[in-house]
Length: 299
Image 1 (spheres, rainbow, N blue to C red):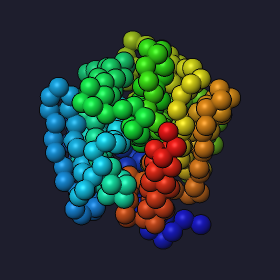
Image 2 (image 1 turned 180 degrees about the horizontal axis):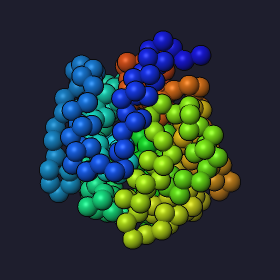
Image 3 (image 1 turned 135 degrees about the vertical axis):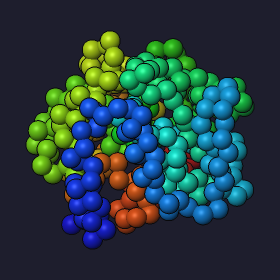
């Protein structure tokens, strides 16, 4: 059974977020709303450094950070909103618990910049990290929701370019099937505390732009998975995107990729972003830290 805090958070989102017609709202209004709702509980002792050129993002570093290694993180927000600021709770926690600097990326948002703009930005940031002296084997990539989908699309883009892959990737409730046709989109309509299926399907069109929603760049679950690095995937059994995570995990395993799917019962979408508010979020972040440490040691 979910913790008391998890159940309270579910109720909050069910009352405050789920009724909002996010896909019909002006993007700037949604961004303003989400940025103003940022949680003020980020881990102490982590320093933030804003980077504006040649790429954009924030470095999050804890004392004595190992600058030879990097966690490259992509925020969620339906490809329309979100920023490093909205995900500082989880990126600060990762920086503190691993002792590895986190680069929390800023990428162009839809609908002004539809797919593949975000993928192009992800590639540019990755190349910048390598040109700055980091080795691909010392980089772990992660993301939540649409940020998780962007990570998979980015890995597939590296594969197409025959470029060196990072050591691994962790994905929180990844949005990888924007076609919205998984069974959980219907079965979890009532249990998902955050979203309605129709909201996600409308939002998908904003990101797809002129591309079909099942184009692998938009919905990377339809792309190629061979030769991708190890994946650690998390999803709630109550959320609409459970089917995305399950399909992703199966496709990766079928292609010979090391992929582990961890599910939790009764939690909100992308719950690790809410660390340290709920014990389940702290536990998942700790599992991510173990994956990061094990993966970087094994390469």
